[in-house]
Each structure stands twice: as structure tokens, then as C-alpha cells.
Amino acid sequence: MSNPNYFRFGSFAVMFAVMASWEMLASRRLIVASKPLRWSGNLGVLAIDVALVRLIFAVLPLEMARRVQGTGLGILNTVSPPYWLKVVIGLMLLDLVIYLQHLMFHAVPIFWRLHMMHHADLDLDFTTGVRFHPLEIVLSMAIKLAAVVLIAPPPLAVLLFEILLNATSMFNHGNVRLPPAIDRFLRLLVVTPDMHRVHHSVLPRESNSNFGFNFPWWDRIAGTYRDQPSAGHEGMTIGLAPFQNAKRQTLLWMLLLPFRGRYEEGA
Image 1 (cartoon, rainbow, N blue to C red):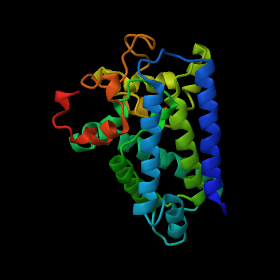
Image 2 (image 1 turned 60 degrees about the vertical axis):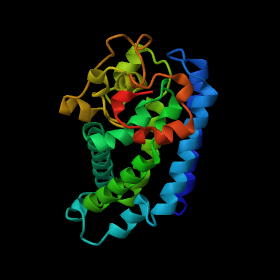
Image 3 (image 1 turned 120 degrees about the vertical axis):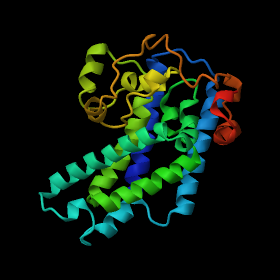
């Protein structure tokens, strides 16, 4: 715990390499847009996001969790379960917050303007899992910090949550193939690529489902779970209907997307 950044960066680098290799060896879908163009945009916005968070926020979730411990603030500071149970509960509650945040970003028009940059990707691969508008990242970090104060999870729970969120975001956005039997089993424990891919369908009735990032249970409990896309995984269209021009997937276009006027005007 003395150098948590090593754990975070190391887990990110390992997952990046694993998913890149897996996609080359067992792709699920044929790509429709230029990979160099998409990757330069997706990874470029990741670099901006990391720099912006470091610039704006003096305290990040792990440090906030350390400060909240023992203050009497927060839900888990009012109870005394075993430490391991506190870690598990903290992890679960943080994941629930992310699920509810994701619902909000689809339901509230001003937040959707920011979030639609993520959905405007014409292909779905592991780099889509780090493609979020910088303003969305800032808002998301503020929500995460507030959640840490409200919940008061142990610092270990926050560290595990951040590592897990980074890893599962790349995993469930991956353009990778899993045997159907394995996919059905994994869906009991974690959001799989086939489960989350439905959420990136061009059809609103499908994109307004499967909001979970880490755990699949919230969608099932809330009734937002959809098993498969109507056109099948190979036949479904990824992205947003007004933004299907593959040449527009540049970093500048992505950053300006929320300010392009009415959503219906498209590309």
C-alpha cells in the first residue's frame, strides 16, 4: 500500500498487453474504422484525462479513503464488521455507485452529451474502455470522491476497486471471442464482452441496457439486463446513428463532440 500507483499502473499495463494480444488472436468482429486513427484518438484522450485529473484534484479516492477512516463520517464508519467484510461491502457499494452514475449519464441530457463520445466509437475494442471525454472524467472523479466520503470504505477496497474498474473496463469492451458456455458462466460473476457489447448497439432499446462495468448483478436486479443484440454480435451496428463517418474519429472531433449542437444533427 506504500506505493499504490505501482499496483495501478502495473495492472493497467498487464491488462493492456493481455487484451491487445487476445484481440489479435481471437477477434469477435471485423473492424470498420482505421485502427491507427481510433487508437491515436482513444489513447490520446486517455492521456488528457490522466493529466487533467492530476491537475484539478489535490486528493484522489485512495487518499480520501485514508482521511475518512476514523473520522466517524460515512456508512462503514458507523458499523463494526470484520475488516474483510468491510472491504467486500465497500467494493460492492462503490460498484453500485458507478452503475447508478452510468444510468444518470444516459438519462440526463447534459451528461449524455459528454458520455456520447464514448458511444460514438464505431468499433468496440479494449481502447474504447478508456475513451471518455475529459469533462466526463472530471465529473466522474468528483462523484467517486463524494462516494468515498459517504461510504467510508477501507483504503484497500478503494485500491482494489480502481484496479478492478480499469481491468474490467478494458476486458468488457474487448473485441474478443469467448466460448458461449464460458460466457454464460462468467456472466454470473463479471460483465463479459458479449454482455457489454449490447450496450454499444446503435439501437436505443439495446444501448439503454447492460450498464454494469464490473459486476452483472445490478442490471439483473434493476431490470436493465439484455441477453443478446437482436442482429447478433457479428451483425449489430456499433456506435451512434448520427455519427457513422469513420473519418471523423479523430481526437479533436471527439473532444468537440459534446458542443456540436443538437444530437440529431449528427455528422
